[in-house]
Length: 151
Image (cartoon, rainbow, N blue to C red; front, side, top):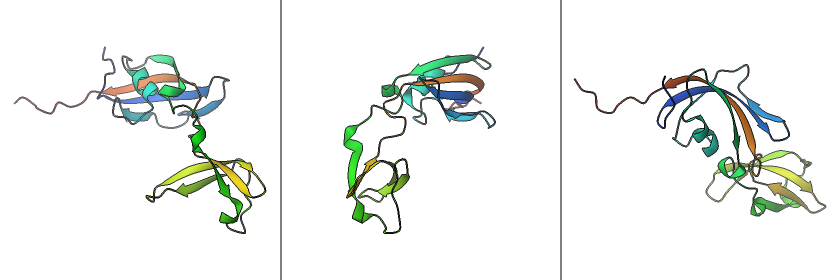
């Protein structure tokens, strides 16, 4: 029976939850997730967690924060002056905004605190610092095509 190895393209159904049981993502009702194992398309713990699985196999994997979205970084919290917001905008805790860095790249931030003269923005990934649990079902495995084919 074929087992997943790096370089294979796989399709999986998954249910992602936090250690308190809260679901943060699931493929339920959608097409299975397709990705190339080992290509850096997935968080490291998910990528390595499917290696060795066979079609039809189900398993649960626990992924540490370090193997998921990394630790929560305090240096990604920043105060942004209230007078830099458009006058018609009322910042609220939980609101997601898009910021631009010096190179023109956009990244999401979440308002975590609204003070009188500033707003605290968090640029961490929403799942940073969290252990993740995935229930995975292997749906399909396609081995990588050889680069050289013998005639």
